[in-house]
Image (spheres, helix red, strand yellow):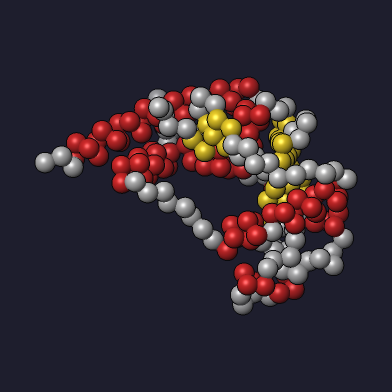
Length: 209
């Protein structure tokens, strides 16, 4: 079975290579990492205090989004695959995908939509639009208070935000579905698969005695 690329990590292979090469140096490095994980039987999961907050306050951020937009969305728990990618969107609404991003603190919260534009997140949302056949996807940056155990020595005033008007604590970035960019995803995944198989073979070759 061919490898499926996770929506959350799709941007790692989407940068363009030089000349006729479909994959960039960074993309090849990422694919080599995946091949190594497969051969050696492990899965490297990067963790950080920022990711820990996102996990801990996800429900609170969804509640904040619902309160601001007068909706009643619930966390999606379905993972979907197609021939190229796999992913689990945060919220699947009738007309869009909504991806919740819980900002670390006041200083990292994007107050304007253009401040929240991010190519990595964009490719993730484009993958979700493919998987759920939706015409639109929104990143919802939500600002909720940070759990005390994560703040550490940082200024607590930058993390305790419940007193701020809730409408000021949600910023939306919208992406419309684009068939051309979805075709690019397919091309990059196919190229990455070819390189993945090559790396697997090379690892086996260099470690056969």
